[in-house]
Length: 112
Length: 114
View (cartoon, chains in turn blue, cyan):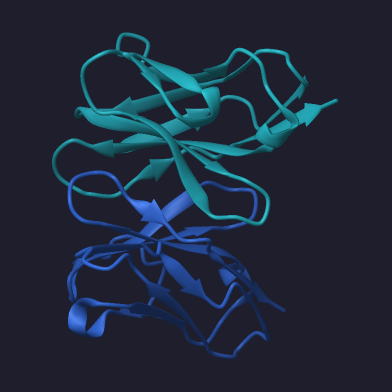
């Protein structure tokens, strides 16, 4: 069974550009989460989808971040325009329900 | 709201020595507790979890952790470490009811020296 897959693994963009991160959850998992780790700090929750609906987006830092999960399968997280402080590792996780979440390998985003 | 504190940002130990990585949490509601591990260039992998029952939980790769409710701690231990245990370890909690989001500590980087 395939795990949670994230694309790309690394991305380097210039300040002001747009970047889209993608997450493919484990098949059948209705819950999909995005987390972010800014360098040297803790991993922080961004948002939670249940199927295609945003259940909790309290962790989204500002309106430059847009997450979608059309059709309740894969999800995208777009940052537009990117700023230097957006650099970090973005993790996606999925779960079938309950508390056990499986994480992807993360996307390392560097904004220069 | 919950918060998690990992008391050591870095822990260097010699191979075959015992290790303890400390984690304390704060929460006004009941929580489940987790330890995740991130090996170099890999994603987060679940090491072990406490949901209920016995307060001593065993995980993969010989790790175990003990939930202490009175001290609000969930320290991770291994009696004898190997070079392959070099990784970053994250303690996390999630509320039993309500918001289904993990709250993480800042991570502890474990370095095993030969």
